[in-house]
Length: 144
Image 1: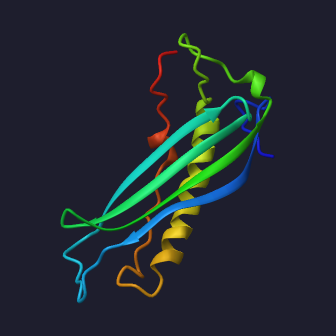
Image 2: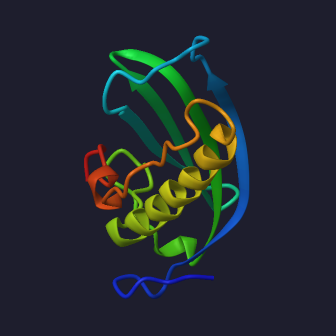
């Protein structure tokens, strides 16, 4: 189990990785026109009944506006100390910022490895997801 300094009462552990999608849509003779654009989606959902946090990560690679490949996966984190996760005014559990940053980092790093493994031996073989600040995806979009 892992903890954060800000929330030592809540532990989390990655318990399952579920690849959910992969596509490669490069035409024969593909030549990259410039830098690839990475479109990244990170979404977190708390399953209160199972005391789990599910992080969905999808990465689309675009060349000149055209999607040439993508990878997506779900990451399941078991939460211990779930009773310490607060709810907002609407009754929705809000993931503490430090924990969200930590699980985002794990999801992004693991997805980087999935991308590399899936694109090995393809025209996108040298595509490596750049380092990304996981805090950039850590905005709780619910009212506190």
